[in-house]
Structure formats: structure tokens, C-alpha cells
Amino acid sequence: MHPTEVVHHHKQTNTGVDDRKLGMWILIISECFLFGTLITNFLIHKKSVKPGTPGGIDVFDIEITTWSTFVLLMSSVAMVLALQACKNRALRPFQFWTFLVALGGLIFLGFQYYEFSHFLHNDFGFTTNLFASSFFLLTGCHGLHVLVGTLWLSTIGITSLIRGDRWFSPVSVEIAGLYWHFVDVVWIVIFTVVYLYIYL
Image (cartoon, rainbow, N blue to C red; front, side):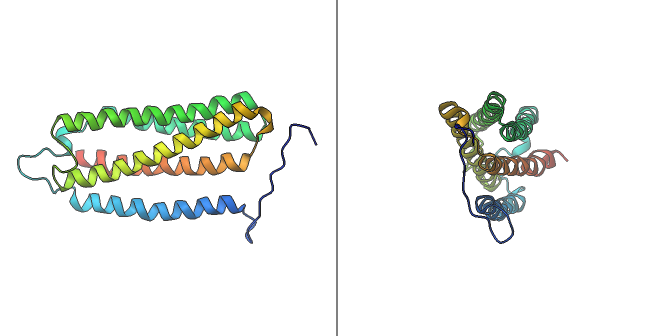
């Protein structure tokens, strides 16, 4: 065995799937229920706008949100490339793509901060009406998930900088990738249901 190579021992489930990966799939399934509930809540209240208060079409900037969506989608591509580099034990490409994923998450959060600030400036806040409450609850929850994923990927990248080629765990990177792809898919649903549907 190469002196810098580390052997990771993890139990396999009865299905032959790594127990950590199975745990992530269970988490993702539970998160589907969470976001399903939040999206349903939004759809129920999407027309609950008090007279004289702004609604989504009054404050949404679809161009800004489209750009943030594009950045998040490209970060998923970078995540795939990071995992492939990890499997190939290519340290520098792995670090590059991992930090690019984290950067994509930060840019998305920057767009969301700008968007929320714009909303508040236009008197569209959490307590404006039921539509606004359900909107901020849904998108804010997703933003929190993006923040968790960004911190997670940043930690992986920093660990690889510290430990170099002694740290190569494709399963750990794959689990983080599953989470990141899930967050991206959820955003596509939110973007469609919240931002695009309102213009139809």
C-alpha cells in the first residue's frame, strides 16, 4: 500500500450500500417531505395578497433569479467533476472543482441576499401577507440548505489542502454530492413553481 494512502473501513448494509450513503438517502427522503409541505403551503397561499400590499409579480426580478439559478446548476456540474477527480486521485483538479462548487453556493446566497434586500426595500417582508410569509419560509429554508452545503464542501476542500493526497474518500465526496444535487433539484422546482408560474 502506498504510504500516503488511507484505508477507510465502513460497514455495508444488507443491500450492499455503504451505511453513510444509505443515511444520506434517508435524509433526502425526509427532506422531500419537508419541501413538499413548504411548496404545498406556498401554493395554497399564493393568491393570499391583501389589498394595497405588494405581491410577487410586483417585486420579483426574474432576470436576477434566472442568473442565480444558472449559477447553482453550474455548481452541480462542478460537483460531478470534483467527484470524478477524487475517484481519479487527481488532487489539484479535485480541489479546484470542490472550491468552485462552494463558490457557486456563495454566489447564489449573495443573489438571494440582494433579492431579499430588494423585497424589503419595496415593503415586501415576511409579515406583509400570507403569500409573502409562505414565500420567505420556502426560499429561506432552501437558502439555509445551500448554506449548509456550501460549508460542507468548503470543509472538504480545506481538509484536502491540509492533508493533501493522504485524504481521498470518494464515498464522502459522493455523499456531499448527493446532498448538493438534491438542493439544486429542489431549487429548480421552487424556481418553476414560485417564480415562473406567477407569470403564467
